[in-house]
Image (cartoon, rainbow, N blue to C red; front, side, top):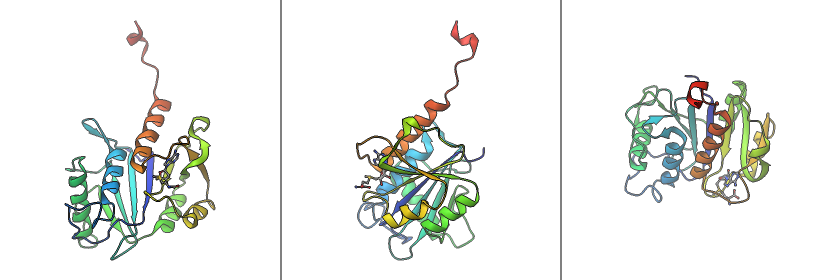
Length: 206
Ligand SMILES: C[S@@+](CC[C@H](N)C(=O)[O-])C[C@H]1O[C@@H](n2cnc3c(N)ncnc32)[C@H](O)[C@@H]1O
């Protein structure tokens, strides 16, 4: 299945060290708990994966930033949705020698936020910068190949927001409550699922 929904999370503290401790995801992991929750909410539904979804985490923590960690629902295998398991696969992917994949659905590449945005733009994607003060998602017809860009617990740096503004984009709001990044991902999926819901076939109506 081709990718239809894509998320980019700017994670300024997420560690790029392959030996981060699984017992301290918020501290030594640099908010890797937040990262793992975002990945879970982007890709898992009950008893299945969203095969049409991909999420990119741009990790800016030490010692080797920036790294782009991508989880692709169409090819992901053997990962379970709990934070510790997701974090352990991130560790394996960070440890894997360059060119080798620890899991067919996980890649780690040496690239920053702006490089990723340029690549996605070249693929014809449309960017939605998620922000409390954007246009309401209720009033917008979502483009066919959407990329939703989210900040971490501190938000998206102004410099990166201005960079995205050079490309086809819209600033989009889920309302005036400031949600957790991982919660925003769930809400976006829910809204898109509802927008795409087809009416039941006629036989089911009787
Ligand atoms: C915890 S919030 C960051 C809050 C930070 N104080 C700020 O002003 O950006 C994390 C990210 O979730 C997204 N977000 C949170 N609430 C939102 C809302 N109501 N509408 C759209 N995006 C939201 C934004 O991308 C934000 O950068």
